Length: 339
Image (tube, rainbow, N blue to C red; front, side):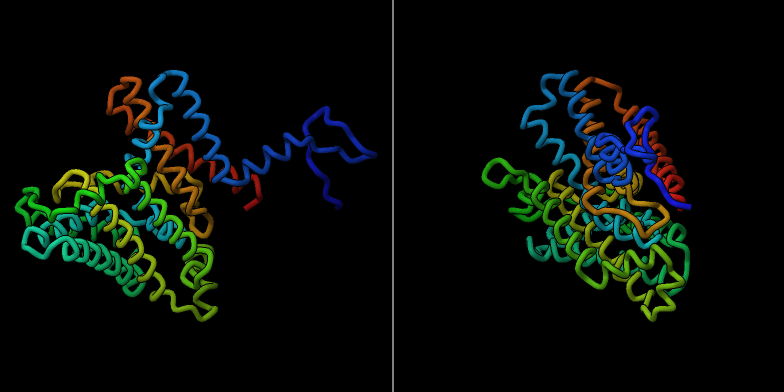
C-alpha cells in the first residue's frame, strides 16, 4: 500500500494527495526533536516570567540563573552518558558531598589548591569507576549498584568529618565558584559550557560515545559485535563521577566549605534535567545539549518562583510534575513513531 502524507482536515490538495502546510511540518519537526521542543518551552517560560516580573529578564538575573543551573548541569553531563547507556546513577549527590569533603580536607592539611582539586577529582573518578565495576563486572542492576554507592559515599563523608563541615580552604579556590571572567561571565557558567562541549565531542566523535549509544540501544547486539561492554561501562560511570566531582568543587568553592551533608536531592535534579531534555530513560536516544536545556528549565522554574514570591517547597512539586510530564512525552513520541 502506497504511503501518503497526513495533513490537517481542510488542507489544500494536489491531485489525490493532500499538501501538508509548512506550519504542520515545522510542528512535526519540533515534536520529533526533544531538544527543540524543550528549548521552545524554556523560551516560553522566560517570556511569561518576564511579563509577570520586570526584574526577571535583566542581565544580572539571567546570569544568576546560569549560576544556579551550573552544578546540576555539570552533574547532568555524566548522568546523560549513564542514562544513554541504559543505566542510572543515584549516587551523584552523595559522591558530590564526598568530593567536597576530600578536596577540603586535602587543602586543610596543607596540600594547597592544586592538591585539593586533584584529590577531589580522584575521589569522584574512584566512586564512578566503582559504580562501573559493580554494574559492568558484577552484573548488578544500575539502580541497586548506585543506590548502594550512595550510602557508601554519604556515610564515608559523614564518618571522616564527624558530620561537621570542613573550612580553611586554599586561597584562590573561591574563584572556581565565585569568580567572573572579564568581570561579567561567571566562572561556573564557563566551566559548564566547556564540559558540554567536551561531552559532545566525546559522544559524537569517539568510540566511547558510539558505544554509549550502542549499549543503551541494544546491549545484547553490542556484546555480540565483540565490544568489551564492562570496560566501557566502567568508563561511562567514571565520566559521571568526574563531572560530579567538578560540580562538587564548584559548589564547595561557592559556599566556602566542604559539606558532608551536601548534594541532597541532586540525583533527582540531575535525572530530571536529563529526562526533561528528552533523553530516553530506556537508553540509546538523547542529546547532551538538551540536558543543559533541562537544567536551565529547572533553574528558571526555581528562580521564577522565587522572584514571584511562591513558597519554596512548591518548587519540588513543580519539578516532579515536569519530570512525569517529560517521561510521558517520551512515551507518546515513541508510540507516535511506532516504536
